[in-house]
Length: 71
Image (tube, rainbow, N blue to C red; front, side):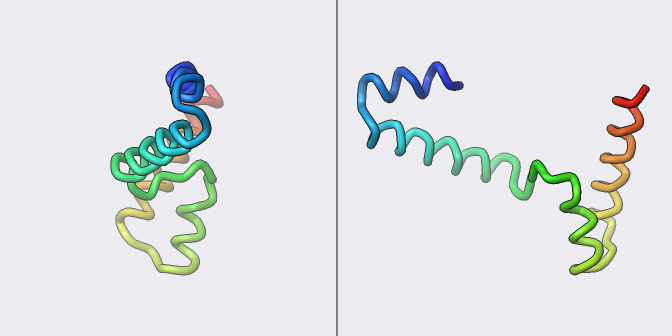
C-alpha cells in the first residue's frame, strides 16, 4: 500500500497523495464500518450503551483471539 501511495506522491505531489489517502480512508470506513484498533472499544460500548448481542460477540471474539495467541 505504501508503495502505491509513494508512486502517487511522486507523480501527483501532495494534493494527489492527500486525495488518494482520503479515498482509501473512505473505502476503509465503508468496508470495515466501526472497526477500531483499541481493544477496549466493546467494553466502553457495554458500559455506556448497554449490553447487546453485538457487544457480546465482539468481546467473545477478543477473548478467543487472546487465548489463541497466548497458546
